[in-house]
Length: 156
Image: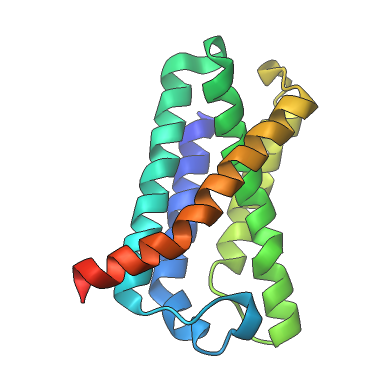
């Protein structure tokens, strides 16, 4: 049940970003490169598909596949951290709302932290969670710029 709830929160977060982040990025300085609407929409769509894939893979395998389990919970932790770094920090330092901050803080953060740390039936090992978090974070961060470039080529 919480998997679907988190997936909905994650999707709403990405929709909020897709609607307003491209215009915001023109004034973001070091917090986000300026990005056009089409290239950002393409990248956020691919990242959303990755999130859906991880969620459904976890829902199918559950706790039987540790690799999928820790990549999934690493993804959730990455989205929780994303609410703070960069969203809250950029909003504070730029004194301008960063799109995605509300959905990240009100939806992703509490639902994700509940799933990881309160819903104890998951039996999550801290070290494996950290490894899953780092793996998913490195993957997502490393594909963003290539996705922006690909989106620009495909959609402009």
